[in-house]
Amino acid sequence: MTAIATPASPASRRRPAWFLPVVSLGGVAAYYLLLRFVFGIGEGTALQQVANALSTGAIYALVALGYTMVYGIIELINFAHGDVFMVGAFVSLFFLVQVLGNTGLTAPITNLPVLLLLIGAALLVTMPLIGLLNVGIERFFYRPLRNAPRLAPLITAIGVSFILQNIALVIAGSGDESSPQIFPIRDWRLSIGEITIPYLSLFVFALAMVLMVLLQTFVGRTRLGRAMRSTAQDREAAALMGVDLNQTIALTFLLGGALAGAAGVVWGLTYGYVRSDLGFNAGLKAFTSAVLGGIGNITGAVLGGFIIGFVEVFATTLGQTRWSQFVVFVVLALVLVFRPAGILGQQVGERA
Amino acid sequence: MTATAPVATAPATRGPMLMLDDVHTYYGHIHALQGVSIEVEQGEVVTLIGANGAGKTTTLKTISGLLHPREGRVLFEGSDISRTAAHHLVRTGIGHAPEGRRIFSRLSVEENLQMGAFTRNQKEIGPELERVMTLFPRLRERVNQQGGTLSGGEQQMLAIARALMSRPRLLLLDEPSLGLSPILVQQIFSIIREINEQGTTILLVEQNAQQALNVAHRAYVLQTGHVVLAGSAADVASNESVRKAYLGED
Ligand SMILES: Nc1ncnc2c1ncn2[C@@H]1O[C@H](COP(=O)(O)OP(=O)(O)OP(=O)(O)O)[C@@H](O)[C@H]1O
Ligand SMILES: [Mg+2]
Image (tube, rainbow over all chains, first blue to last red; front, side):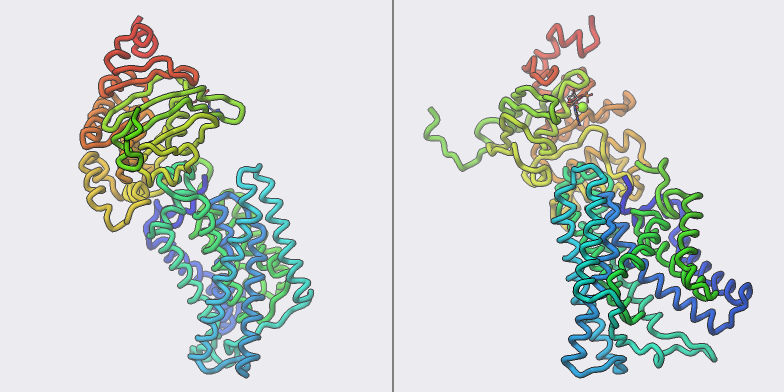
């Protein structure tokens, strides 16, 4: 069985703790140098692209975590997860529109405390709501199929994906719905000499990192986190320890959903629009991230998210936005050829 | 008549701690237990021996709630647990070290032990950790190692220790000596005796009938889902057909 591996993944076990952070930083630096000196991109643009990639990657990583945790515990590719994220982006949109409408505030909000309060409120509303939506989906659609052949819940997940997408279509229509960009993007910038980087990118990255560290700590260090990892490894043995399988699976969907909700809030702030097919587009990239990193592995999902973010921004930087999707999947295919279980995934021989 | 017997008080002192009453357990259409009746008294070591496929593991799983009988009843300390789920039964005092060790290979030794005490207040498990590490000093040395990197014998110790962490009143052990070197087998059996002397009732499934009959007070012999022989360990050990079939004599 593939585990929700976190700090105990076989790949990271053999390497010292500093390995991943150092390699990641090295990768970011190499990326910057590549843009600067191989592709001859100006200093300012290159730095901006790095910041852009960090925030784009952070969103994919947050969504990828939901794919990977659910796969880790019930070995289901939850195709509806991207759409759960899309619903999160809509919930945040409606919430912000309501608040702005009722308070007379207008986006962007330049009063920092008010801005943070509002973003915090959007997270506090969206995360639990989307978490519960995800729990409900598991309860009503996947749990009855727990002992059915693998294909049944998979097809059901695709069905749930269509249901969510079509509900959004009916409510919001097929076009872009504009989401209030309450975080000032143009005016709030970090300037380093001539160069400016929007604080939003850094904020999004920092927020995602905080959430991911919280998740790691929960899964890696708490009693319920241990129960999740145990259940992922051997559910019968976990039951003998007193772990309630249904509760543990529900908890996994709750956490995955809440992170997708947070990603939805951040998506709206960053891109300023939401569409009913967001789950299909951005969600697919998040799914790709999870597979790239090694599905079932939490660290892998985060790594995969950032890699996809960087690759996509790279394609865009070269003026090949139309090709970004293509480049993303070429990278995925290449990695899977050499490491079929993903970068940090357990290769078949490593499975216990 | 025992009509005057108080019903609600101290069920543990009335009748056996564990009673299987004509239990039938199936895997789909496969009729694995075909009317098994077993009793275990408080404080005993009872062993269940039998050939491969006789139904020993199935019996233990039926007790710990991983399987449920289609007919018959399982009573623990007087209450019917036939339909109770495994994760509840740990809380009522049944610990099960399953066949094949089943430790969590990607959790550390310490985390495995913490999982054993999952149902208990995590702040109060210190003394229990101390107790099992005293029983199994090897585990203390390996406390931060991944479960999967332990040797077979160490994994077996971990499996038993993990089951003890819930402080069970009844401990089910499924082939704890399987695949161990003769010295380790000796060690495991002396630890089983020690655990019993510390007050835990034990139902022991073993291939190693000789050793099991040495440590047990009573024994049941299982054959294709039926109890074919029951009695004191000494009586069973001296039974002609048991000697031939399970003790390697002819
Ligand atoms: N999951 C299962 N599905 C179908 N049949 C099973 C399953 N598990 C066990 N059986 C069957 O039930 C019977 C009893 O099996 P059980 O595992 O209880 O035997 P055992 O006495 O523990 O044997 P061993 O000494 O080999 O461990 C066997 O005939 C076995 O084939
Ligand atoms: Mg067996």
